[in-house]
Length: 423
Image (cartoon, rainbow, N blue to C red; front, side):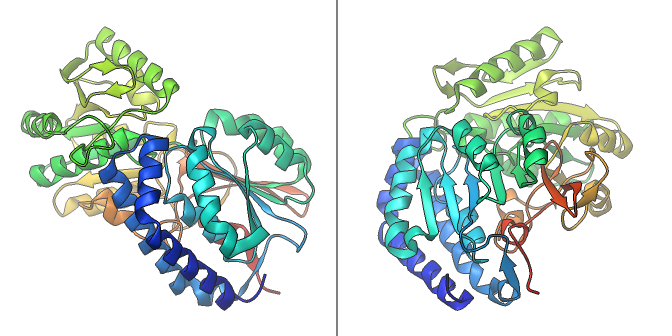
């Protein structure tokens, strides 16, 4: 498919095409995915920056060869909670000289067709789009000898069912999954900065991101003041029509997520928690909700929420906070706010710098840890030059090397995982 310089030139053409069609891309995402105009503007502009960032990877990619032979391609299954940023995942695989077969989520079919409209004149058949049912697409990719690698964004409950098939067919399977991210407020934290960051990262996309904080742990001495400020900020969130430029938060797209939220709120109240704000659900509109008095046995602490609901607990000391943060099957990202001691605390939560073989699933560590740092800042360059991914059920790689089946965990780049060092 040409040299790395030629492929980078195609990416520059894509940047120009997205820029020229920016308003239409934003309108399509608002209409198709239900994200707000404000969110879609942020996403498109951030994606353009990310695509420009691939220029810095040219030297690295020049020394790699694709996982695919000329008649093969990588299968990529994308999630519904995105529009513009999905370009980064697609291009990262293409830039290391792979052909890519892309399947958007069914509910994002209009976004898929608009993306294909932009891609076809630039990439031809190097990047193709499928509109079949997701399950059929995945099962066909597993069985197809011309697809050596599959990258899936989705739920761990869905992905785990394909363990035996992936192993039997010797495929490489790169999975990016959910998070149940802890947000930890230690003594000495700047409460205003922490509350502002929690409000931003919790309500953007109505909490429908795998890196949205969901478990909030606040030192008992700071709890009341922090909750008061966070509730105040949550009340100020303008909820409404995604197409309204003033709307800050729109609806929750998934029926499953809404059912989970209802179950989690009922379970929390039944077990003694209190809803300090919200709890109102009108159809797909879930209003900003703050639950206090949450405990580790509650569904809202154990399982992904994927909505604008925060479950807040207290802790007495750093040791207890560390234990609570680690006590979950997901390990994607953690946020820590505090004084100078917060750096060491965050370092203890962090896993390896890049994915690595493990004997079994690793729980209690995270692929990314932000210390006194906003989610947006820590996510700069994600999927471009910054490895992304986690531990436990937040993501993994299955692959067979020299007839040995291997499990890997930790942050990763799709570009590197779909290529190898040039011989």
